[in-house]
Length: 502
Image (cartoon, one colour):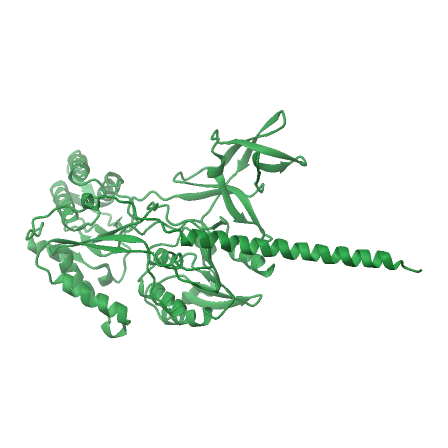
C-alpha cells in the first residue's frame, strides 16, 4: 500500500506544532509562576506608621514589680528538659489559688512584652478580677485543672502563639478549608466552572458576592497550575459550602463538600527520624528539615546550602517544622546567598529588671565558642543589655533587603510551621525565584518563648516572651500565606510533577 507523502508531511507538521504548543504552554506556566512570585517578593511595602509607644508600658525605672524572693519562680525555657506540663490532679486552698493569680498578673505586667499590646491595665485587671471571683465561688478549694481552665478562658484576649499555660495556648488558629471538585477559571464576565459541558458563572459563595476572596491559586494532581475554591477560618468544623452558579437564564445551587488541611501527619514520614535528610526524585534535590531545635543534624542542614546553591531547581520541605533556634535558618541563608537575611520588622524588647535576670540565666546555656561571628556579637549585646540596672525598652527596626538568586526554590509549608520555622519563611521571602507551596503557617511569630514562670502553689507554668515583632499585614494564628495553595498531603508529589513538565 502506497502512502501519500503529503499525508506524512501533514502529520509530521501537526505533531511538531502540538509538541511546540505544549512546550510553550508548560514553559509559560513555569515563567508565569516565578514572575508572579518575584513581583510579590520584591514588593517594598512601607511599615505602617503605628505609634509603637502605645505598646510600651511606662515602668518606674528602678521598680522590680515583684518581691525579690519571687525571682526564683522565673527561669529561661532553655533550662527545662521537658516543656510539657501535665496538670496535677490535686486541690489547693482558695487563698493559695488567689495568691497565685495576684502573682501571675503582677509578673506578667512587669515582664510580658505584650502587656500593653493586648490592652494594658484595663483589660488585664478585668481578667484577673473575673478569675478571682470564680475562685471565690468555690466552697473550699479548687482543683488545679479547673484553675488552669479559668486562666485559659479569661486570657483568650492574648492572641500570641508563644504565650502558653501548661503548654496550652488561648490562640485562635486559622484553618484552610478547600474543595478540588471544580477548577475555577476567569474571563471578562467573571469566575466560572465547567458544568454540563458549559460555562457556569459563580454568582455567590455562602451568600457572599466577593468571589475573589474564595479563589486560591493552586496546582492539580498532574502538576498543572489552576484555581480552586478555598478560604481560611477560625471555625473548627465547616463541612460544606453553598455556591450559586448561573448559565444564561438558568441558576443552580451547588453544595461542595469541604476538606480541612491538617498536615501534621502528612508532613512526617518514616525517613524523618533524623529531623534533616536529603533525597532526590527524578533527579530533583529535596532538602527536608522538620525542626530547628538543637540536634546532631542541624550542622548537615546548614552546610546543605552549599550544595543547594549550585542547583537549577531545589525543593525545601519544611512542613511540620515547629521551630527551635534561629541560628540554623540564618546560617543556611548565609551559606546559600553569601549574605545575611534582612526582613521588614519592628521589634520592641522589654529589657527590664525581671527580664534581665532571666536573660543572664539563659546565656549560661549557650556555647559561645560554637557561635558564628554574627551570633557572638548578638551574645555580647544580650549580656550588655542584661547588665542594665533599670527598666528600659529597646526598639530595633530592620528593612527588607531583596537578594538575587538564580536557583529556582520551591518551599513546601503547612500549618505546623511555627516560630523559627516561620522566621525561615521570612528569610526566604527576601530571595528571588522562591515559590511557597502548601497552606498558611502556624502564626506563632509575634513574640518569643523567652520566660517561664511557675506559680508557687498550683505549680502551673506560664511561658511567654520579652519582645514583640510588628509586621505589616500579619495576623497571629493565621501566619504567612503561600503562593500556591495545596491543602492535602501530596504537595511534594504535585510540585515534582510540575517541575518534571518543564
